[in-house]
Image (cartoon, rainbow, N blue to C red; front, side, top):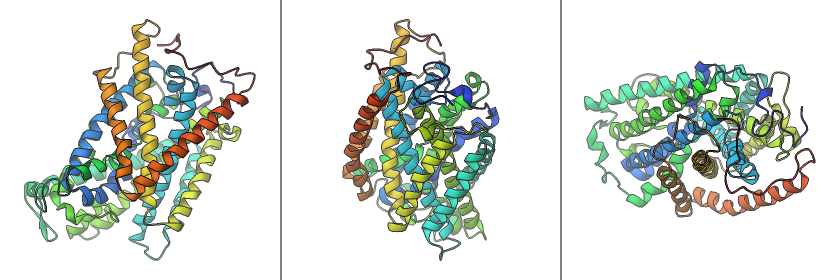
Length: 483
């Protein structure tokens, strides 16, 4: 292994030549889909419907538009240069070394907190069947199983994630078909009847007002987190320039159907008052249908979704931490890779931190999920903002003739860039006015910034001679011989 601070293959390669190109077209496309369907929808939508009412549909639609532009920005960057370092590498190239350091660690924070949320969700789902088993024990068991899978091989991860994603997609499609049928026939669901009337009954479309709907934006952004993981998979993908545009476009239209479509149907199948934070809204619907075992089957499916997201988080953070470690920006151990081409150091580093989440489940099991998702949202906003900003700089460099701009581009740039960045700023600005979990996450932000600032100062001083001094942030992106 190269010592920290050196990059085999030259700047920007992030050591991609050390990875086995084990992920097939089939696996990458399902990883892209799986990253866009997680516990934020399967569990989080229930609590937010109970808070905001049918107006939650607006939050999902608005965030979906922002996610569309983020994914197209990512697509343009990936076609410019596919790399397992993803946005960390792009931030380093188009903004400056400090941006790569900060965005990498913020993304790690995002997935570390996501892992806490997912393992918490696993405990909540299993509680339906084993109410006597403490939530923290289930969370710990899930973490051990997924850690083992990630350490064995990339191909095994890809295959497991493929089938996780198949199950999630089949479950969503099943709900969409069943839900649409219930609405069209005004069928009885428990003591209620499905239909568009549920969108405005029980207090109206926004029963608690527009401010409460806006306060749900943070949770919805978290629900969309993971869609950017397909960019990380580019470094271990066969023929990324052919596969990636299709995978990214697939994520975009599935967001509209799976997320927005599901929330619309949830709000029409049952009144918003029927949902709660302690149960998946999909389990609520199928349980009330009275079909024997339907609720348990859906509970097993949403359990799969939680395991899938945590599985993806371990995969993503292992690659990002290795990218940081190879430049001396993370502990040397985090950059280690085994003979199976698995960056086991970064995966273990994240897993160790996730055990702290097990402690959170032990201490405050009822708040663990909300605290983790709120903290994770800060990382999501940082990553999305980084991708949009890097695409701006790529576009500017192309206009100056410094790089060749890919044909797969972000539509409406640069106007859409600024609108997306403004939206992300609004999401963060609303957090201190939301619930207690959001407030806790927001007031941790200054501490996170301070730690990143101090960490970057230490890294600058400790850079090895092989790396050389870190140059100041350039006024524009450096010239690149690659398109």
